[in-house]
Amino acid sequence: MKLISGNLGPALTARTILAAGILLLTVSFGRAESDEESSPVEMLMGKISRNMKKLSRQFDNDASRSSSLELVDEMIKANAQAASLVPDSVGERSGGEREKYLARYREGMAELGKCLASLKAALEANEPGQAEALMDEAYALRDKFHEELL
Image (tube, rainbow, N blue to C red; front, top):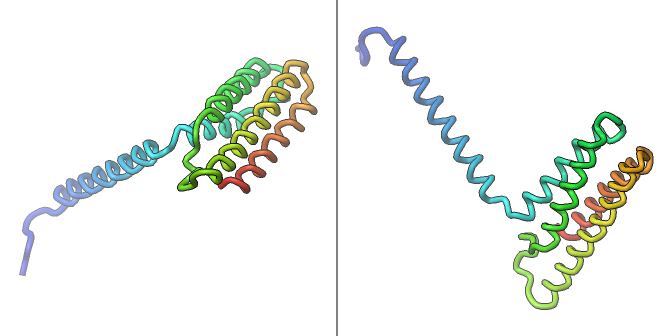
């Protein structure tokens, strides 16, 4: 018994293309939803993280000094913006527990801000050793406060 007659090649190709298109749309919408779900704090912290990663690859290159300074300026700006916001990680906390959490969050952001300002000064003074130590300090602050607050 033959269920489908004729040449299956074009039909399979059209079905394959249709299935691939549906899969692509599903993946695209999934990515769009996950981007929309990122909070402003998460987006700003992501920017700091991406810029720090870029900076770690170029900070000791004199030809990249202006680019490195721009990255640090962007991190300082993102840090200040994030410090003024309430992170989603505050969760269901209320009252004194919420205030204690937010105080610690802001303390961490202030420490990072000081570290980034020092990092900028080290880059301006062309002190790559000091800049590297300050980047390590920034990563250590991230680890410390993420462990405490997340």
